[in-house]
Amino acid sequence: MRLETRRIFLRRSVGVAVAAPIGFALCRELRANAGAEGLPPHARRKLLAAVPFVDEGDFPLGAVVGSGLGGRLALDLSTLTPDTLITPNERFFIRTLCPDQLRFNGSWMISVRGLVQAPMELPLEDLAPHAVPLGTHLIECAGNTREGHYGLISAAKWTGIPISKVLEQVRILPRATRVLIGGFDKHSQPDSGSLPGASWIFTLEQLQASGAFLATRMNGAPLPKDHGYPLRLVVPGWYGCACIKWVNEIELLDDEAPATGQMWEYAGRTHQDAFRSSAFGATRAFERSFQPLLARDFKPASIDLAAVPVRVEKWLVEGERVYQVAGILWGGDRLTKTLVIRFNPDARFMPVEDYAHKTNATWTLWSHTFRPDAPGRYRIQLAVSGEPVRTRRLDTGFYARTIDITEV
Image (cartoon, rainbow, N blue to C red; front, side, top):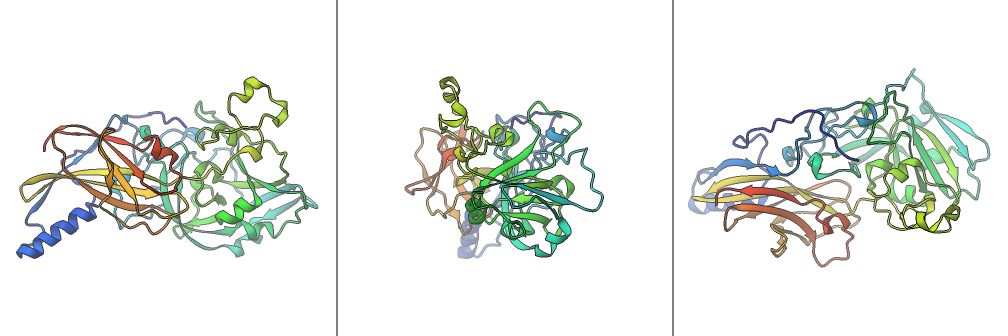
């Protein structure tokens, strides 16, 4: 997804701190110094300014832009603190706004067809009693880019119906191996950056292993309309393109099923880099495009372990200017103790000073103190060192961000 600027975003003054500092390491250092010398906790530190990231464009944060398929809402990650890791519904990122042609008259049906003993309609009221609290889970858009300040990512507490409970209502034929889950996606106005149609195909095992569910509530409230009311698929650990909103369709398929339009649209952004030439007798020219044709040729659209800086603060500490970098760590399927950081491509990586990685379901805050030797431009990049962890986006510098240091 390409984020298109629709209004000019007026950046806040960097001389005003608008969020509580989230530099754990620095705060601990300051408390230790204060305790050792018997000084008040804030006597020797002063927040001078927030340092903005540069070369990221002016896409607005915290405001809905566009409409329909082109509607976007990006979260301001710089406001994250230990107390705001659950994103309020009104601030949770939006990739597509509620279709203007959606009419909800109080009842909702999921159409079930394909490799089943008989097609059926599943009423929401029959499924609703199976909804249970399912914890906090993060969703990230596969097109979460620097141009949008990486704001297409959020975390919420979800209540929903496990997909296993939904499929218990269906008599599935033995040769069915895959499940298409689709949602209402009819908009009056097309969008140049999006294709209409929203559906994704999973194996039965993928849905089970991920703990996929149909969300009915978000942060204790009914699912908002722009987040898929009345039903949104959530596939923990997968990109948002697979987390279908306004779910109204389930189809059981076999291994010969073609991929959906949504899967093709997001093939590059979900790292689909392999393709079987036997599919549909494809020509060699098309084979070289590396575009999978069959659903079975798609790898899971899972989120690799990733990290990004979200805020840089300039402090005066004991008469010395220091910079506190704070960020988030998320994704992957295992925990890491070897998150590292560097401040230019030719610099060596060093261990991130302060973080406690305890979950892959949502994000974790980290912080690091930076003492630059000279003014200049610095590129902040994270990595994972010495562990067999897949980090495709980190490895390419996808989440690297740049700052200008004017004082040392």
